Image (tube, rainbow, N blue to C red; front, side):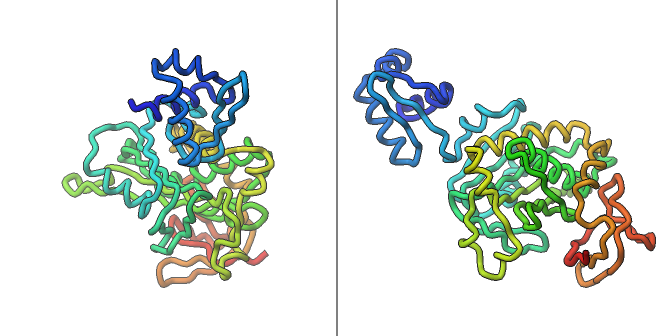
Length: 321
């Protein structure tokens, strides 16, 4: 391990505490000059390191994405975390890795920026640098006989909503099936995709993509999107919650649900947060448009209309209140 990384890891393990240069030198068995140079390089990379006379150095989590930071906050074991500065798409990278890896541990891919992020139906997902949370979770399909991608998507929506409630004390809403709303504006999109095994003709792995406008200023979005999208920026700054902390908490919430997600015991919570139940909606399925009043969302994550029609896929494109 090089000096720079050793110093960073020590700071992270002692997050919030000051460490003198002498203590660092003794603990890491490196010179004070080497430590000073490493601190200078870390600052140049964007890490915020406070220094005080007779107290030493203290690393501040200012949101620079880092696996060690995330692991510091994380309570879920056996997650394989990969963090990138920039990437085409976290879901696409998960697909690329899926055919090469032999581990059964969940893989989490996080990027500071996406240059080719996409949502449902291949629509572009705006992914500006340094501000959002762009994350994909690659899972082995352990539910061959009862895999329900829609229910898995609803589980992720609940995990995101619980995280916002826990860290920011703020209630969210969910628009079936994959949008989390704050004050009526979309702040999170979720995309679940399967990786097929041609030999067994089954879904061998599942990829869940999560995109969140975290400290994203709305000015960076195209004008046509600003009326519909929101951001967690004000809340994140008010409660001093970094992206690393939010990611860790969200992963903890998701994997707490995922262990037994097919039981659907979180669906009552999902229904309470739903903005479509009792409303007249327009549902788009490829080139087909269906209009009706939503009766409920069932325990399989499907939308049920009052006329008896049930849909496990599609997109709610309009809600009449």
